[in-house]
Image (spheres, rainbow, N blue to C red):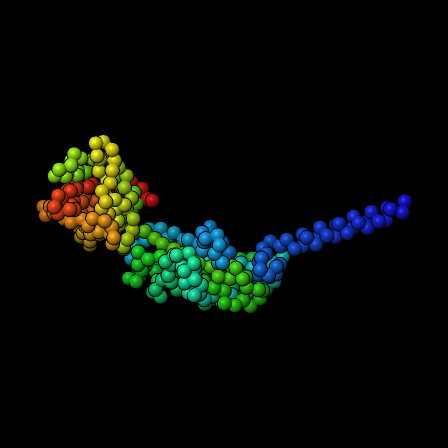
Length: 303
């Protein structure tokens, strides 16, 4: 009989311990500072940063973009605590280029802050009383300074918050982004390849080839395909097609892209047909034993 009060006391202590654990398990916990009223960047898509990165990195696909177009880039900022925001919380934002440089150095990346003409960052935003999150739309302008060949990222930092604690690991976040020009995509190719000595002279058809954006009106072919005794192969040449204002096409070569192509058939008009989304291209390479190529590339789908 005397053991009953002891058992009740132990049971009561167990319940108290469980209750204490539950109180520590808040909706969001900053691992460096424990359960507090934390202001932080919330996920915008998947965190694609290296697993050992101090800060998160999100990638935003701007889709198909054209000159002077303005595309919104969404940023989410949250208040993480046991309750919703007890008051309006003004959050001041800034650019942390030092953190982005450290990320590049650590992970051998090449991200850089875009030119000032490309983005306009509001200085602050407000998490409204009674809410947990707010969103900010940062306008990204495809200005003349926008370089399709560069890897852009906005390294945003929460500089101050009128209430709560700034997260030590989500108080800075990298918002990398990129876009594609209207010629970018997967194409079905047919055509003819000739060689003065090799056995693979003849037509080819139906290989799928990826064209990747390398400029506002330029795309790079992954490699030039051909059929060798019935088997699909690729030349070590990586041409770049640039569509001019009159839809004529200039053929150049990717830097360090293998054998440089040249145009050797002056009678053939390299061109792009916007109605059918088709490239008509002829070029060659190797002046000693020229491989002459005629490609018809028709858009199949976005990549």
